[in-house]
Amino acid sequence: MFCLSLIEHNLPLPPHLLNRPLLDAIKEELERLFLDKVLSNLGLCISIYDIRTIEGGFVFPVSLGFFDDIKVPVHLLPHKSRMGDDGIWIWEHECGDLPMDLDEEVHFRVTKINYPPIPLEQDANASPFSPMEIIGEIYGDGLGLLSWWAD
Image 1: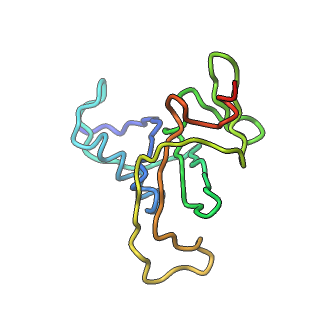
Image 2: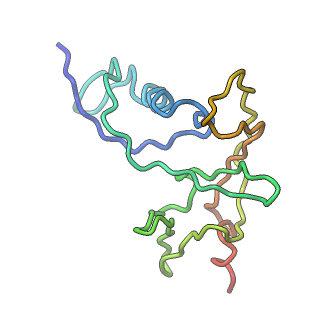
């Protein structure tokens, strides 16, 4: 007997999947996590039937001034970060809320460098091709906005 179950999951998408269509990347990651595994109180997962909603998701852009293809995915922001009502990310630190304002200087750690394959054809409305993408993180001692560590 088979049972269809609805599962809600917060899924950090690995950087190497960010160049694929979003739905395909999410389905691939969900299959990696759940397919052919026994889920508590549900049983054996044999298929991902449907993805009902995709909410949230954000990649924090970083620029060196001469190189703009640096991204910091949400799961590599400081833990307990949230997006404020004004669209600015906020780190909920024990000493108070620390906003991650755009256009501020930041220290980050490179976690991965991607060299995507050159597309044979590109849609007219697609963003320009980037031959190299850097994935970084700002969670760690001394990392993050310089204004956080000013004193």
